[in-house]
Image (tube, rainbow, N blue to C red; front, side, top):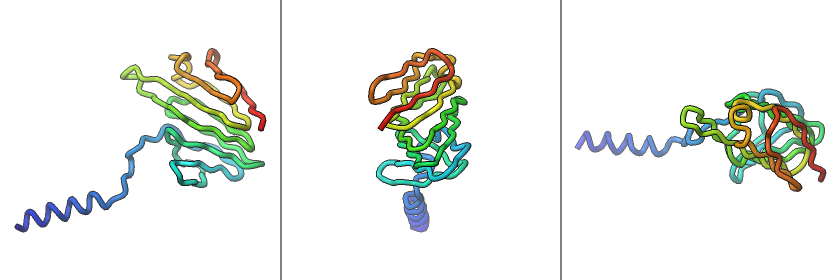
Length: 147
């Protein structure tokens, strides 16, 4: 009976803990000026330097704000003021042949510098704007989406 009680207690404690690490970080905020937020699910979070970025995050920079993100494959993405951008897909598993990045930019300005995904598999990187999809063939580009 005592073992059953301990087992049930452990199960309860395990399920009561918040599920940390259920999603893997795909990048980090390395530079930040002003107010930058992320919409993660239905929750808006103000970001700070060192905070993680996850797949399906929607990033927002306010006026007079900017953010620099370094992804796990060393891709560098810099967001200018009044930018809204969604990281719809990110897969960096080179040991399994899994390389993919799909970014949807809704408004604002951004600078992109290719990391490992863009260098090893440029066809696996897509950057969508309201007017076009940018296929990566180089290592660096700038994009501006007007409101």
